[in-house]
Length: 338
Image (tube, rainbow, N blue to C red):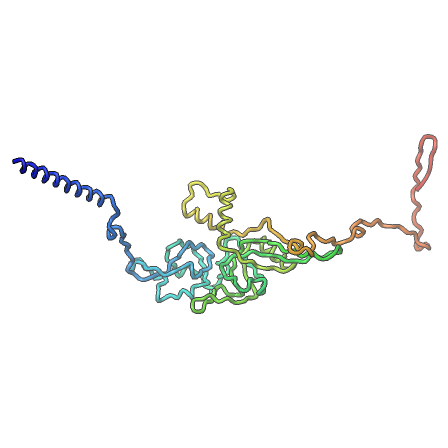
């Protein structure tokens, strides 16, 4: 009887241990990582054809480049006749065209949203509101060796040599305007590619987008000296934008929508900078060059000269009228003089 009682106690303890283990295992499974099959989300890929969509927001005047659009699957029932379809449209033929209607990121490109260089009013469509187009002659030296392409942004430099009578001339270069968009090189707005590699070629002129005042400054600069273009980094605009926001120079209105905020920031990034500029003189480069402005005229030439009167040796013509006499009285004495 005693032995049966011990067996019953051991059997009960074993059942309790098994139940506890199963409960702990269930608790671990419920709080652990889900199974890989359950964790993987099901992504539904549209079964329709691929259409050309914008990879980022494309405002009016954007020059289409290879990294701004791509083909993506699109629901068959939503495809329209105006869309560019993969297999029917050639992206290479669309590069260099200009967006004349704003396109949001991820939206399909339509045939009416692009202007070809062969279309009338193409350059006017590429210009932003209130902007102007001006062409600058360049060489391999002043045009970054051909590494400037439509859509890039550049700074404009003016090099000049100021001569004077005071010693050697002053050699100087200054940045006159910054963040200028390139519209075309020579008369082309496209980027040539061979086997998928961009072809670097030289050109003689570069057409840039400026404000009316900057267009005047660039025109005068070409008469003063040599104009050069300096290619800007893509990261420069973002860093300057961050600085403007941090300093309070650029403010986004309270309650502005995401679309309005993106539009304000896009306009700030694209705005040409015409203000305080930097410069370097010959003395900053070489100790054998001068640093100060040379004098353009001597001190004697700078001083105003007084007209001198010399009487003619012999009278010619009628005698001059007698000069009036002035009498000065000092106390009881008087004197006369002319």
